[in-house]
Amino acid sequence: MQLPALYLKRGEDTRLRGGHLWVFSNEVDVQRSPLSGFEVGQACAIVDSRDKPIGVGYVNPNSLICARLVNRGLEHALDKSLIVHRLKVALALRERLFGEPYYRLVFGESDGLPGLTVDRFGDVIVAQTTTAGMERMIEAITEAIVKVIKPRQLWWKNDSSARSMEGLPEYADLGVGEPASEPMIVREAGLEFECDPVGGQKTGWFYDQRGNRDCLEHLVKGKRVLDMFSYLGGWGLRAAAYGAGEVVCVDASQPAVDLITRNIERNGLADRVSAVRADAFDYLKALREQRERFDVVILDPPAFVKRKKDLAEGRIAYRRLNELGMQALERDGILITCSCSYHMPRTVLLDGVQQGARHLDRQAQLLWNLQQGPDHPIHPAIVETEYLKGFVLRILPA
Ligand code: SAH
Figure (cartoon, rainbow, N blue to C red):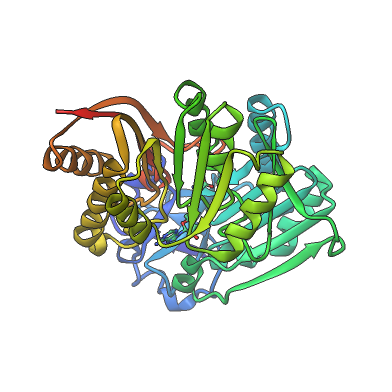
């Protein structure tokens, strides 16, 4: 197979040989292989300084991560048959893990398909590419998904802000199937949630938190639960199904609140769950003023730290949010707090909670560490694949 070679500088093969898949632009020997000689998204052979090939990848000469490895060795390029193979390997894990076809089917680098995310909602697939190399493969990916899954619909939800770093436009598009009249449904732990593949957040549902929501079973019976940043009510409705006495879901987005309301009805939980449109910080401050308290407070905000340089500001935002959350708790309360910011270290989140607890003269006990579920596998060589962290804490008077 003849592919143009991307030569690395001496020593710059170590990370790739250790399992990572990314090449940064300053690691390329641009004397031997000028990046300007590559097309955006073009397939290449990644070769070390002693001319030993590492494998096949794809290039984006305009991106800081200028190449990603898709296969070790030079036998197979990224084509439909390799994608079919990777999809089957990914599917085997999910079928082993879950009794029903609702999961993240492909989690990018961790599933050997850098730059591709595929979520499955029964016979509806919502996929997203975040790199130019994967964008070029959209037809092959579509055919591969049709072959392996035979979906009724496949949506391309290519509107992630990460795409701008690769010079890609943002759009959402039906790739396969007919625009349907029936809503897209996700089933989780015996509940049904209606979601929106086009207008919804990300690819429609936060599968990464599913396993974490299981812990509610032990914490909410007969209790008052506050689900902040509730989106479609994943945490809140699960709490109600586990016997919570009263649940309030709060989200700033009106479309999200409208869908929660439908999901409350759909699951027959209207007697115990309500949904409110509000800014989380304003809502929590109002609770403090009114001295209204809950037994369980869930804080599952969007990423406050999107770039590394936002960490200083972001950690203050997490700390403030968690302090407000603790102030909304009864004397013996449970705080479930999460961060999906890759750049926010786990320890920094926990330190912020502890500092907030001291500031309010409370005592915290850490009951569970939370992480993304196993359909978002972590690649041990690629720290960037581990992004979701959270804690279940008991908060007591000091
Ligand atoms: N907890 C959800 C996922 C939350 S995603 C789940 O388990 O599925 C983050 C949510 O926060 C989005 O729905 C977004 O609309 C909402 N949001 C963002 N900023 C907000 C704010 N300032 N106040 C309240 N909600 C906000």
